[in-house]
Length: 373
Image (cartoon, rainbow, N blue to C red; front, side, top):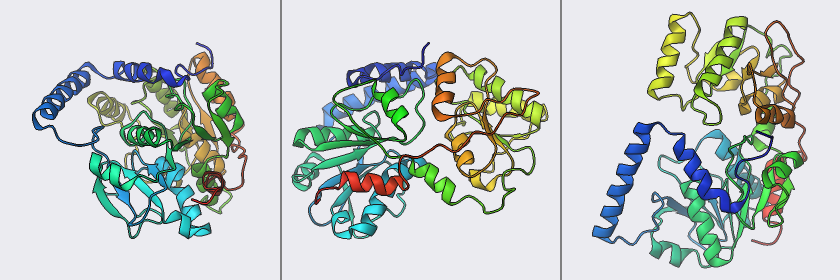
């Protein structure tokens, strides 16, 4: 496989969904089919007037809404990519930020910038029709998950613009950029790789607010990353590689260095828990305390986690690990400047990723809202 995305055309999105579903365990696919059947029958019987798509919620100001920001979760990558530009806008132009609404997933939302006086609404067809007549743009991570999907649909229906903010590193299975969108990418290399020259996408390289936050919040001590054997960041849940590949990379590194294995929050399935238990019995330390990465000590390693670059931004030694990487993974490492670790060698640490702008969040805000509201 060459270093090119599997799904880069906007019309590839259904293929991406099919590919993603095919990676699920059989039990999950069966449960999803059953849920879909129940939802379909319930919809026919009740004929509820809703927008569907897993019923996202709207958090709206009392006045006109010119922008919707769609969050798929309240995790740090989503908030850095999508909420931090609104925070920058609220600081520079609070009168414009007052017209920003939010599409929210399930769960308790944190305090969102400029939204102190907003009210929550169910995303029914009536609410969408009555409250979004002046919608001019949406800001999303993509259209492949519920919040972004409905936001992009509402934008299309109203002739509004679509802005896509890159929120993580781009692996081979990254879903495509929506049609006729403006893409706020980490780097020019990422924009070129993701779009493959698509003429319908305007690419604006801005950097990563998450990585900028990592740089700004790094401990002042010069030895902050050098104490102890460090951690290996787990990705057993990942669909891009076989589970055995992720496990082999982790085992190779932790056995050679004594590093602790730090499970990804998504490693809650039966197979992942079984792997953790087996490693514990074999003497591998499992760091499942849930503390932020910045609170750990020592070098950081992973197969292709964003945490490698977060550590590099903070001045910590960080490496990429895989015993026999496929071509796309080697291309990924090159695109982000990740140094490969091998047993018996200590390579140069991964350098910080150069940012096209000094303040990515402010750069996004300036471009998105360059015109009045």
